[in-house]
Amino acid sequence: MKVGVEFKEHKKMNIKKIIAREGLVIISIIIVGLLLINCPSIYLAVENFIGRFFHSRLIWEEWVNKPLYISIPENIGWFLLLLGYPSYLLIRFIIWAIKTMKEK
Image (tube, rainbow, N blue to C red):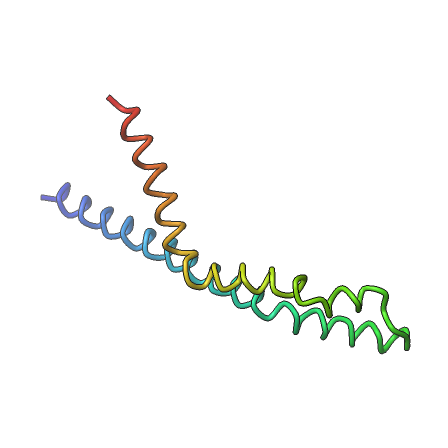
């Protein structure tokens, strides 16, 4: 009987580890996505912070003001928020399927 109880406890720990791992993946995808969406705000905040010390216009200020330069990280951020986790699951499934097909 002890073997059955130990197996159930081991199975519960595996399930908890899987849930914890997936939770961390979801949280990290959300954080990176939000950081990329707010990328222009972060650039402007850094520019203002550095500008206070130098009391001058920064050279790369022109780059920050370009719409294309700002929109690329923002679009990647929205992609991560909306499709990041499903893409991660699809990649994991493909890797699992290839490993399963290789086994005899």
